[in-house]
Length: 516
Image (tube, rainbow, N blue to C red; front, side, top):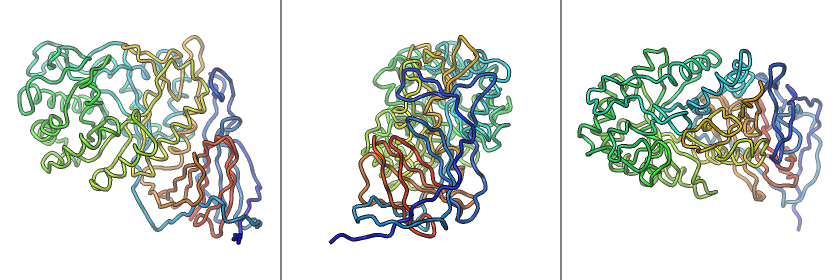
């Protein structure tokens, strides 16, 4: 016997594009949006929603970037579907984790690109595209403590040999001339903006291999002079930024310690889980607390490496009560991602350590940027990682470098990467990749303090992913990702005052927003 269900269909009374994308096709499977001195599209999202109104924003591979559609619940007509229908059930009373923020990394290279390749109003335009109310509204930025691969040179903030009192420690030109001015501008554009730092490597003279890269670790062991120097280096960095008008929200213990063990072509510091545990307990934590940078004043995140490193690095540290007392959260990267196992690791970490938030501190694509201009496939991968991370207790997501040139640089190690924004160094224009708009479906709709609510699915097709949130101003937001080449019909319960159906476009990201 076939069971029948009463399904609602939308009647659309308004469709619009807030600001039309100036499309250009390159090598990717979709298009970029071009910004120049004369024109750039904006992201204008309705802040006020009338009761009984549903607003839909949709981006897809072929045509649209946050196309807005307005419908009303009262104008629903009914249609009968069979019981094999794909159903999403939303439970707004079952609340999960809260959002900390979304953002990207203001690398040395990104800051240099923005301030040297662009001129005048275009600098303000790209910063507004990221941090302004008509852009992505990023409220988080990651910065490197000293250099990273996305720098024009290999350096630390104290390269004077055997400087045991760190008397030669000083912020670099990259900090003073490039990153700090842009961090201040980001704060002006978004008052909720905050930044956190990650160190790629200690000074070479503190390391066993005496090099900024490779597989060297700190000389001797936790509690000894070099480990204490490395902790004091962090304190000096925090204080130096504060003296220059930027108070950092957080730090990670170190960028990719596990990758450093294997050896790296760019800045790296090898540290085992036990070394980081004891360094935090004996050196870093006490140094931060003594300098006024305790948990009440600074957010310290551990791991800052791939999800598959969480079981060793996180468990080793958080199972030690003294070391754990200095820690607020667990940072992770996307490079070892494997659906669904990588996200199950996040959920397991939350279940074991519910008092420590999870936060994606780096995701990004490698490769020469000009080879991937307009890639929708890369945008889908961003959306999948963000959405599934959120579904498994992550509190936010941080992109890698926010602006590269067409080669994917600058990068002293020639580790070329892609970016949401690619700047053409031969003309005054830049390109917003599909990844930019994938991020918008999260950063524009889930402000700090948004709370995930439970959603379950029945008969969900492969490659369709869903999540649901309540915002601080009491809107219910559904984010739906269809990675299939075909349309997908779905029924939604618990979203509006009645059961509704909608059809997801092929290769699309859809947000549905209603006032509760």
